[in-house]
Length: 121
Image 1 (cartoon, rainbow, N blue to C red):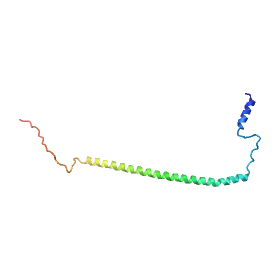
Image 2: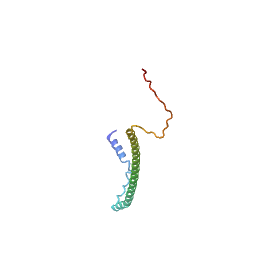
Image 3: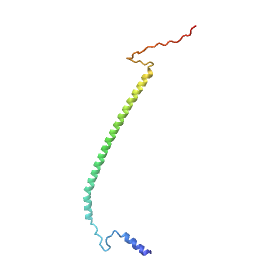
Image 4: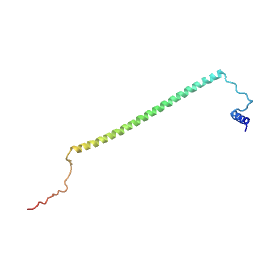
């Protein structure tokens, strides 16, 4: 391919978006029309910002509620764990302090005597 053919192909590809070369380009917008468009977009932008703030606030509220619920759950589980650990500590302390264990309501079922054989002289 020579350079002229490449230029033609590149030119046609770069101008492919145009419908017709003989067609007139659209007239430019007047400044008045441009400002009217901006004025019409202002209420739409305001509504979109308000909706965004509303949904962001709702998301933050749900996040705060979830954090509080999870925090209460962790507090409750920690409290139960501390109570169970304290009960085990109390039981072990009471067992360490007593040298003899007193059992109430116990009955003697059978009494046996053990005699040692004394060496005879």
